[in-house]
Amino acid sequence: MPPFDVPEGDPFGPHNLPYGVFSRSGSDARTVGVRLGDHVLDAGAAARALASPYASLLSRPTLNPLLAAGRTTWSDVRRALTAWVTVPSHQEAIAPFLHPLSSVTLHLPFEVADYVDFYASENHARNVGRIFRPDSADSLTPNWKHLPIGYHGRSGTVVVSGTDVVRPSGQRKAPADPAPVFGPSVRLDIEAEVGFVVGVPSPMGAPVPLSSFRDHVFGLCLLNDWSARDVQAWEYVPLGPFLGKSFATSVSAWITPLDALEDARVRPPERTHPLLPYLDDSADDEDPYGYDLRISVAINGHVVSEPPFSTMYWTAAQQLAHMTVNGASLRTGDLYGSGTVSGPSEGERGSLLELTWNGRDPLELPDGKRAFLEDGDEVTLTAWAPGPHGTRVGLGEVRGRVVPGA
Image (cartoon, rainbow, N blue to C red; front, side, top):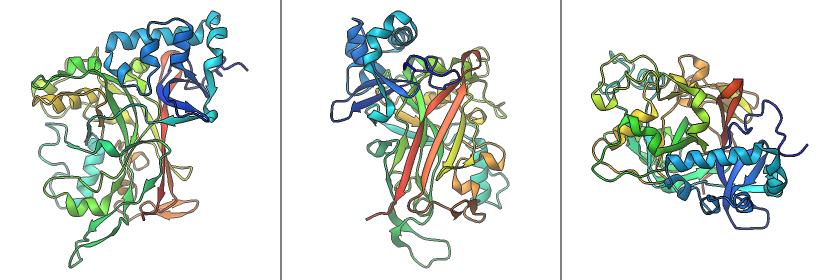
């Protein structure tokens, strides 16, 4: 079967075309690739063969130049790529540039500038509140429904799917312990999230309004915010996450452009509190900012949760508006995470903290019980979204295996 003939129903068909960066076996040269089924198209080589004006953008070792090119170019390039892989007359010209995924190495697809992580799921926030503040009248903090809570992370430890995650060490102190101790984390966790990739920058002092979200954000990917819960619990008062989060954040090798997700756009949940004008999206029924993404979380191949992204209280557009409302600038390659995605039911929780209720109720897996992750455990996030004409748009997986620290 020729690579052009992607099987019907393949979530990585011509309706999707996510972007990545790859190198071929025996070569260190990296270039932009576009996924088509179980193949990757060398987009730069194809563009040169077809004398495309976008050849220089697609022949780079990172996506950043394409990200910076802006929305009009993003749409133009996508139309060109769609034609290249669907119009029969192009098949002979570009067939030599389609490579089996099994024959290439995938790399971090863009150079990460800044990294911010949010806390946007009401279900997750309420679960965390009930676990750690069981006697509080409200499981949410007083500010939670007025602004998207977030923290600045460490861009230098964002890694591509398939990278091993070394178990971090740090200080920890249980409530009953007389003093803190130092050592490897014993409560290593995951957080199933969605990451948004900024393309077009903004100047300092110029907030980005909700309406400009799609002018700045190129696309999205799955993201695993690995978390050392014991380190985090001891360090986070009063300034928030630090070493408990900064050791690793895994992202997919494939960035799905927002243009591929038009059929997945949905209204977010009903607001229960009035919002300040810069966050108010109540008039945007015809241009919603939520996305219907169906995520699955597996440990050692066993699915433990299926969190629905459509339940997220705060949208990516609101997060971008809040992130810049004080005049903070955007840079090409900025990455911001949605925060843990959790639904209302037990089987839709996006972290082991919630799934095991802070270790009280371990998961029963085929290879034994798990309260938190053990060395050798491999976590895989996968997802799909509704696409045009009943298709599914696949998101590139995020996979990481826990290895012991030195």
